[in-house]
Structures are given as structure tokens and as C-alpha cells.
Amino acid sequence: MASEMFEPTVPFGEPELMRASAYQRYLDELGAGTASEPVSSRISSLSPSLRADLQRFEQRGGSSEVLEVVAACVRHAKRVTIHLQCGEKVLPLTVFAQERLVHCPMPMDDLVQNHLWQLRVMHVEPALLRPPGDAQRDLIGDDAMHYPLAPLLWELAMRGQRRDLLPEIEPPAVYRVAPGLEIESLPASGALSAAIRRMQAEAVSLRELSEWPGIDRERAERLLNGLYLQSGLIVSRSHPDAVRDRWL
Image (tube, rainbow, N blue to C red):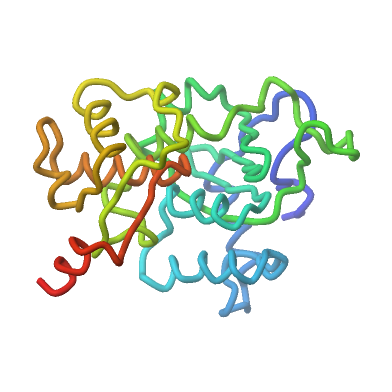
């Protein structure tokens, strides 16, 4: 099967999404005879730190979760295309971490409202597309397919598949909302909004947060993931409460 059929994105118009079964056959062909890099011969062109993160996910056994992979791309500030299985189709989501944008050939409202729970990472590779304003204009995607990154990160954290804390912020630790976070920009209300405002004034452990009104363990972990991905979470491991939890 010709590799030209599987460009990560199409830099103009509205691309037709590929069938997941056909793309999986393509990935299988790429992986033949490369035990150390079974998914892509191009993964070596990712930065060493990002490559190590992605391989760490795979070594745990099981597939990488969307939130983990997107968080890694953001943490390492890399332009990456993540090929996601979305039902019977493949959705190429290009993350421009430094520009805080994503390119997505599916309307973002449709993705967020109808498909977050079923997304599965199939493949990760360096982005071929360029962000708006880049000198290589022929590689810039359609304006209508660019969306702000922050709202997608929040929705993935609050309503995506992952229910547990990201490994970078796992206990023992205490958590506080960063002073510079624009709380009004977050789509949070009720108990979540109250918890965020309370965390502006006091540091809290995961156990304590889980016991606040309207917050259970899963909701607390999702909230912490969401705040972390908005660059709005201060994580302290030297705080006395964190040290006490470590000993306990």
C-alpha cells in the first residue's frame, strides 16, 4: 500500500477521513521487522524526551490514552500529529503546542460532544502541517479547521476516557490553583467552580479534595488533570501535608 495515501493531514479543503481498518493495515506494514519501533519508522524523528514519554506509555502494557499523549506533546512543546481512531474512521489531530492551537478536520463541537469517549491513539508522528502564519504557506491547513487548544484539553480531562491522575502530578503532593489562572475562562460551575476558587486560597491533598461537597475521587482527579493542562496548577511535594501523606 502506497505511503502517499496516508499523509497525516491535507493542507487544503476538507479531507475525507480514512477507514481505521485500512490505516491499521498500513501501520502493520510499517512495523514489519522493526521490533523496537513497531508503530512508525518516523518516531525516531521525534525529540528524545517526547519519544521516551511515548515509549513509557507503551511499556506499561496496553495502548496510550489520548490525554496522556496530548499532555506529553504540550509538556514538550512539540508539533505533533496524533492519529486517533474515531469509530470506523481515523482522525488526524495536529497539536501546535507552542501556538496553543490544534488542527482538526472534524468540527470541534462534534468531536467534543459526540466522540471524546471513543477516541483511541493509533499513531503519533511529527506534524507535516504548519501553524497559521508560517512561511510555508502551502502546508498551512484551512483556517476553519484550527481551534484553540485549551478548551480541548479541558474537555479531554473532564469527560475523556482517563479517570486517574496524570503521572506527572500523582501523590504524594498537595495542590493549589496558580494565581495567574483566568478562572472565568474555564467552563466550570457549581461544585467544580467552588473548588477551584477555594484552591486559590489553600493547598489541598487529593484525599481532602475528594471529600469536598460535590466532589468525589474521580471528579477530583479529573479536575486536577484539567487544571494542570491549563498551566493552572501548583504541585508541591515538600509541603508538610504532602510529606505526611508520604509517610502514611
